[in-house]
Length: 128
Image (tube, rainbow, N blue to C red; front, side, top):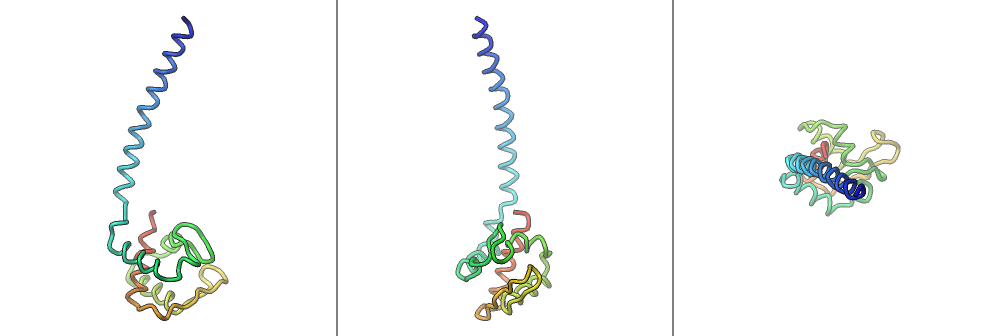
């Protein structure tokens, strides 16, 4: 009989604990969907341009590779017109020294507008 009561008590405890987790999971899901940037046109166009380029050879969205992670770039620079123009220039002309000794190769084939669109995508990753 003791085993029966212990079993029921354990089931009741598991049910009580499980109910709270579901509410928290729903809250987290709702909060994360409010910061979903994948429908942003700058995100979509920038991701498309980066996908067509050689950028992913050296960069990744969240992890450092040969170059810095895009998320780290977004953390370093505010999303301003001046920074977008400056970073687009670095993509086109190349650069070195800001993130270490490995230089970024120039991409002169990119238009300034395309490079700016890529930067807009990168800067959107700041809070991701």
